[in-house]
Image (cartoon, rainbow, N blue to C red):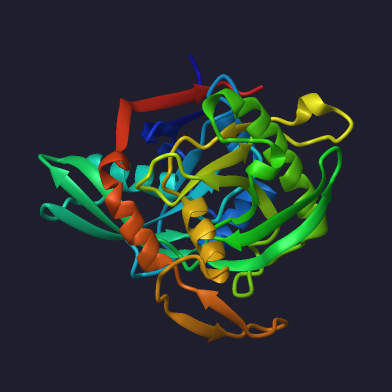
Length: 337
């Protein structure tokens, strides 16, 4: 049997959120930074994303990560994230999966009980610590890229819902965040269908009405993901959040097109984005480092560095944040057509 292409990948998951990691069979692409490489795939080789994410090689809730040589000499490896409708600049669950696969396959050597490595992402360098025992990764913690709030308590008009007050923040992706209670939601499992549908509607409306662009990385722009937030059920927690990942393009005239999936892992860019909005509202009892930044074409803004907070939050739950390898290395082959 003659194959047109063979791609080697490792199936992994972080708290049940799947993140297949491509380790071979895909060549490097032009780009001085990982963001430029991501844009190259997006504009010139998007067929790879569709090949890996659509059936029979993928499914709506799946993610893919492509390991590439780093563009920064300080990094151990680089990677590009591919999802059903976008290329996220940074993802916490995918970072955990990538670090686990790099170490357990030997692509990056394990160095002692705790291995420190630096990953080159389209959003910037991410510092990772992985605890291992006998070559097995037990837990992964990471220091996210800086998060910051862009819009706080902004009213938007959402068809069929009316006026919805939202926040917009960046934690590696631009999130629109809304309170669940005014929408009649309690963020319980039996409401999953409505959570996804309403989250997708709010995201689509916010993307149209609240254009955003990263002031230091112009290639990162637009609201692409939604989060609904509500009071915590667990007395030890501060908030209860649900992140909705798009799995298809929304068409206002076709309600059946409002497709999405709930992110099953609590550790991701949404954590940082939510913390940035809480700090901006004076509801987060931290003393973050604040630093003024100026970029061409942008006014000075104050950036909330939530990396220390996200690190601590991830550490508290790190026992559940490990990525598990599943089925070993999988060879994905196709004959074209």
